[in-house]
Image (cartoon, rainbow, N blue to C red; front, side, top):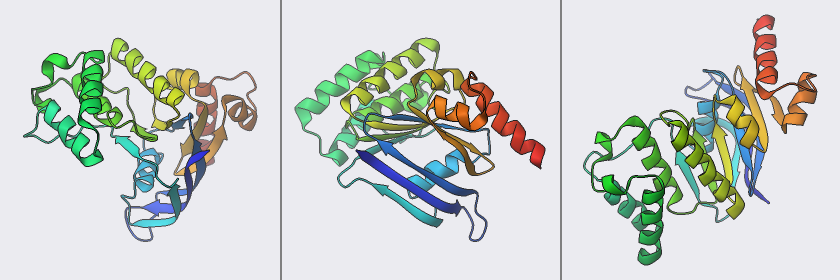
Length: 238
């Protein structure tokens, strides 16, 4: 079942100056898609287009009717005057979550991510890793159908990264679909169902790792090998 269908002909920040072209894919329930590409390739622009943040767009982005999604940005964003618990209360109110179930889930997530003792503090005082964990909790509290995650591993230590991967695996098992941009290719290779490799604003390869290998003619290559060949090949054409 497709939760999200994306068919972007072009999109950018200024009229007549597109940054990305011909980005086409769908996201199914229980699937984790890795959005891969170098800095400036168009990953963040693709995500912003999906979120409806860019005015200058040609194409369609369609979420399945009734689907809820959570967005986890690369840089954590919080209200300066709210504690983490108040952020959670605000999210629960917006999503109209039943109070008893919401508080139980919030307490479980805070404990799991070792933030229980910091829940009544302002996230602006947290370390970068703690802020990233707080954003993950806020995203997961409503049990969305779709997660859109931009570079989640920045600021996470190995233990927190392991915890994050376990959390999104549980969400996948629940049936959530996940689109995740990342530079951590060895981890992406292990956990992602499919990949979208973007370079120079265009989708250069897509599919499972075996599909990517065939498209790159590297039948035993790693994701890094395939990514490097695509990036190097396109750079040599310039």
